[in-house]
Image 1 (tube, one colour):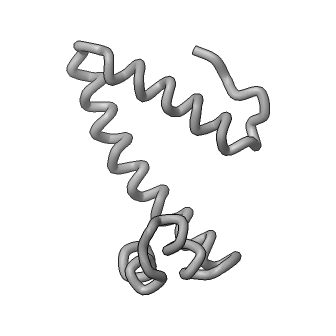
Image 2 (cartoon, one colour):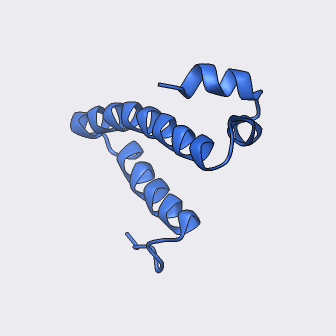
Length: 80
């Protein structure tokens, strides 16, 4: 598995994450499936933290726009 050339590059970090997730998804090991379940929850929590950070730096309208929803819906989903 490769590592991102620039650790600050979101696209490179996402590509590395996808590569690792793909490797887990191809495994027949029960532990790999368990790890994917945990990652799913973790990503959901990270999305909330990221949405709040973006809203604080920009706006809930920006968050809603990126998420393909309204600012009100984004706020209702990720405010806490």
